[in-house]
Length: 435
Image (cartoon, rainbow, N blue to C red; front, side, top):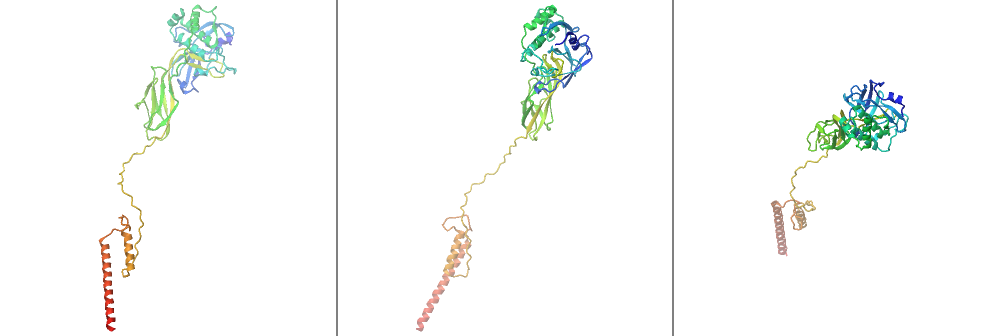
């Protein structure tokens, strides 16, 4: 809890001591689904001279802290955060027990689940409830108060006739009611401010955490060369925003395609895309980069670091920013399918019966003994015929020359026989004559 004097100096105000200070907003350490905007954003405190709202939105309001301490002139205003692309976003304070931003400061854009944080004294910043329902209520207040709604809309809803500064003040104190249980002092508050404050507090609903702005999910995908790797889903923050998608690090011929395989360069919110690399590509990896103008919605959480004394913020209005996010892709070599070849179907043949081929016994052609003839005949039968009367493809062919040989041998044997018979008869005649 801050005293009136110290709180006035630590917050930005009409006589702020940091009229030329700079706030640095760094978007680091985020999961891919929560990334948005540039890596480094800067905001300039210039006494709100460039405020887009009529007049100066700074006012002092009578409040009561959650411990009952009164502060009759609490400085209330929107906090400007000027982005590196030259645009400016406006934010509400969501830590009434912390100091106001002093120059230079560093914030991180983080999901609501990053709350609460650790303060400079090592304690956890106290919240009125353990869950994040207070943030959903704050988001409802922001989206139904000023400046998210026009002054005419807010006055009509609350039955008030407030100025822009009063409507912004009422919205900020209503934000503090749900973030810190700080209340507007009804006895001392301006009636028009009180009307809007009561309307926002008594009719509060819950608005879910804003959808991530520019994002591509999943963070990484794997596949095979020649196939569609993904799908990756693109979000740009709104249906009106588009972005450019490119691939780097892949082999020549790599491209981002849609489900039908058509090359894609520009994508819209909700589109699904794939990475395709050539089928003959070696295993590798590439990066898909998504760049474009995207929307930071009202209710976006700008968290001050752990250990910092100054307060966290939530955006009061949506803003367009330039952003770049990326996802990775890896792939393996393609499955190689052998090219079919046509071969001639072999002609079906019966497998020859294995027979033992007996080498013919060498015989002398001068042998006249019948036994020699018998041996030669057997050898010839073994070569030309299996011996069982069946025909075989093995061995030598039975030729006419072979038959002639048999006839010659037979004739020779017949002649020898005749000669032997003749010699025997003649010999017997001689013996008979001499006797």
